[in-house]
Image 1: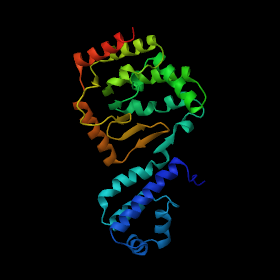
Image 2: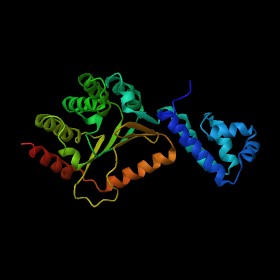
Image 3: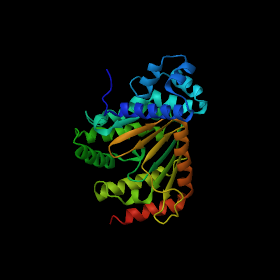
Image 4: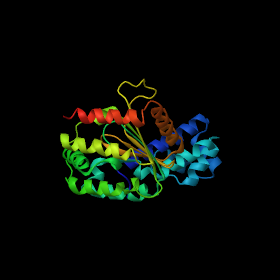
Length: 282
């Protein structure tokens, strides 16, 4: 079955097709000339360029080679393989509630060894208390007009966080100081959540940095993103989850994380900011 023109998967395929078309144009090749170099019909080139036919990995490599752009192949192959998952609307992901979405990422969490997480809006999911997660997820369900199973989803979110305490996983986590001040749930909920952050900081496999309000910015505040080793990035937008797998794009997020790390404070300075946020709840 063909994808809807408005679907995220089709949009991703159209982006890939446009990048392939740009490569052909930059190489100053006609569609016919490219087809000859690749050993297929001009009609196939046209179908690929107009996103009517998804290219295979071999098609992409042949296209890049014909255009003298072999260095582009790895990114395009990665994007093509994950086109169906690159851009997933939250309403679709949560159409049966949010618990399933929490459980689906467990295998990814368990196989990841290095987590690099930047959050500018809420506490990262793997550090959320059940009360904080429930308050947040119920708000999301109401906003999205999707089934509210926030209590069950929150319990699943906490359960999947076992990776913080088990195995050989390492966590490098960066929070904007604003995250400590945003009121999610009641004052008691926030106090419990902030206390949890203080406790997690003591774990040997966790590095938690706070980017102060007053930091001289080397990297501007960004949308929340999660790097899973060097294989994948998940970016959280208002309407959708974006899953990045192209090596060059992953490298950009890694560069941003490194820049943000340099303006964060750690240890006693980070604990002092969390304590200040707790005191402000009184």
